[in-house]
Image 1 (cartoon, rainbow, N blue to C red):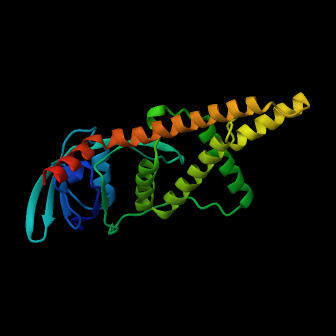
Image 2 (cartoon, rainbow, N blue to C red; image 1 turned 60 degrees about the horizontal axis):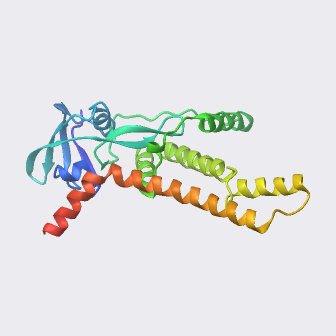
Image 3 (cartoon, one colour; image 1 turned 45 degrees about the horizontal axis):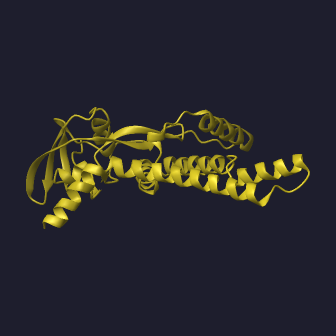
Length: 239
C-alpha cells in the first residue's frame, strides 16, 4: 500500500502556511491515519469540523510533526454550484495509486441538452446567501480545487460560473443587458423615449448596486483569509 502524499504548493495566507507546511513536504500521516492518497487526505480534512488535525511530515530526510486548524471556504459542489467545505489551503500531488474517478458520459446530444437545462434550473432556483458570494480570490481557489479533483469537475465548474454570469447579466438592473432590455420595454410601452434624467438616475442606481455587490464579494474574500493576511503582514513587517 503506497504511503505519503506530496504537497505541490501551500497558500501564502492559509492555515497550512501558519502551521509551517511547505511545498515538497510529504504528508506521511494525518489525524492519526497513514496518508495513502490525496483523496484520503482531503476526506480527513473535510470531516475535521474545524478541529485541529495532526500531521506527520517528511521534509528532506527529516520527519516533522505539525498541527493545522482547517477553515471553512467556498468550494465546487457536485451539482455544479458551490458549497462550504473545510480546507487548509494546500494543493496535493497528482500521485494517487489505486484511486479511481468515475463520471457518467452522455453522448446523446438531446439528453445532454436536457441535463444542462436541469442543472441550469437548479442554479436559478438555488438559495445563496450574501456570505457565500466570492470575488476573484474565492473563484480562483474554487477553480484550482476543481482542477485538482479532475478536469471534468473543472469544466463543470466553468459551465456553472458561465451560467451564473448569464443569469446575473439578465437581471433588470441598468448597466446590465437585462436592464437595457427593461428600459427598452418601458419605452415600447410608453411609446416614446424615456426622459434623459430618468435614464441617468436608473444608470446611477444600477451601477451603485453592482459596485455594492462587488464590494460584498471582495469583503467576503478578505474576511475568509483575514487571520492569514494579518499573520502574513506581521511576518513581513516584523522581518
